[in-house]
Amino acid sequence: MKTSASVWLGRVMSGLFALFMLAASVTPKLMGMPVAEETMTQLGWPPGYAFAIGVLELTLVLLYLFPRTSVLGAILFMGLLGGAMATQIRAESPLFSHVLFSLYLGLFMWGGLWLRDERLRALFPWRRGED
Image (cartoon, rainbow, N blue to C red; front, side):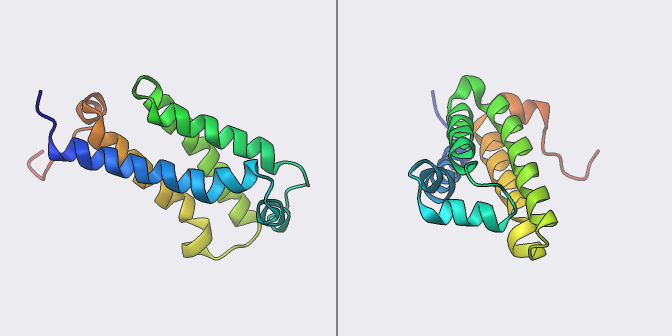
């Protein structure tokens, strides 16, 4: 069976998304790095939530990467990213670099999944201006 270039691009995008989440968000929280707790405090979170959020993020990354649960993982991730966006808005963070960063991640995540999952492409087809 031949795998198309778009499927490979989707796999690469999904892998990059997962690596970014694991390196930039999950690892600092699960390893108890001071930067994770400091960032959470700056955003108005009480102490002690970083580890639990790290566990949640790790669970969602695994759900997203496993083909059978990838759509569920992406949907749940959007809830998490929406909460992150709301937190940035409440903290009055800069719009394009902080508030919308969750949107950028979500678009990249869904783009990778859409490219690698034929069922998702069938559900949400890309159409040119004919219709």
